[in-house]
Length: 334
Image (cartoon, rainbow, N blue to C red; front, side, top):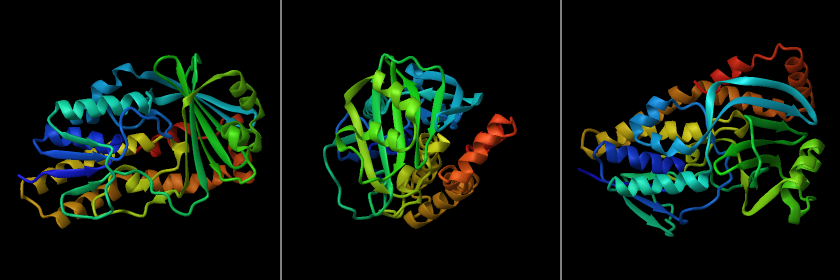
């Protein structure tokens, strides 16, 4: 039986590695960093089913997650909607999650190499899970944990040129993660606060200044684009394949789902039932079918939220009670 090498030990790479071990496939994961680490991420999973996580063998990691069942939306300083979530959102930091997944992978018999960066050389049996690749783009992602903040549900704050989500995670922490159009005039010493101010989120900025930040959790990533990514090789999972706009709250779920789709095709390759090109092509076809609706809808809604007209439309429809929140939420996950 052939072995599979996964380049990148983030959510999709580790989930895929654990799943492949359950399928009896030998796996080696090469990760450039070391665990634990903080990453720019919304830090909640909402969309992938509990049955899929059980099948993959990763469900126990979420035993410590906070279960969020409500969401509130702000446009600028106006609270325009507060609704129950059609599906539970599981809040858990990547600092905890990746470390636990790495431990599970090793315990399952996988080989994990940390602190080694791979060249972008493709090869049969090599899966790319290195996340979004930096290139010429107009977006910056920022994330920090605040301490001692009890969150009842998820919050989404939409500003003039970006948005920020707040999500409770383990140990009485709240994750503040935003996506903003890059502005060279920001205060580089206070990046997140500066972007909140530039985006007209004055009420949130006042709350943020009253919170106690975990400076060690502060991280940023810039220079990337949404949608289909510049793939490093033939077989890509997670953000290496497609980066869905973060406002959907579906990025972590898609990372897990792409690993779930990839597992059986990689197992067939490992067992000699398919060659590498066949396995890659069938995986790509399944991803295109599985994610088509949500990626198309997200691609249309993202620019709408960042236009003045779009924000007024969302604010008016939400306050009037005609915004089809539940329908949009469902279609962004199916």
